Length: 100
Image (spheres, rainbow, N blue to C red):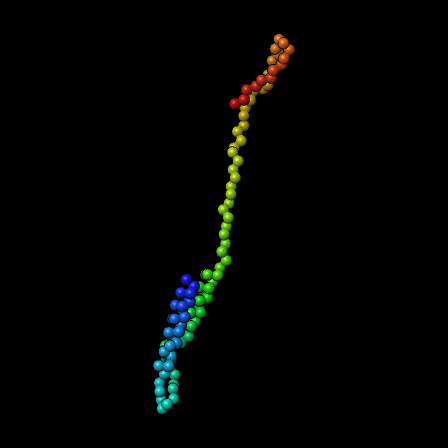
């Protein structure tokens, strides 16, 4: 793509100056320049266009990594009844409670 754009700009710039000697007047064997209407416009335009294209194609590529968001599951609070101790006839003690 760069080669194509460079070739087009070069062609426009060269073709602007290809006919430079036909704009003058011949007066007794001396050439008096009359200008061809092109001047330095195509050269300056080509230089500006070339600088813009160079800037576009030579910018650094910045890759941003996607942000990773880790969400912990919500903590569910349990409500529990107080511990109750029960002593059985054989001497064992059990503690119980219920939670929701």
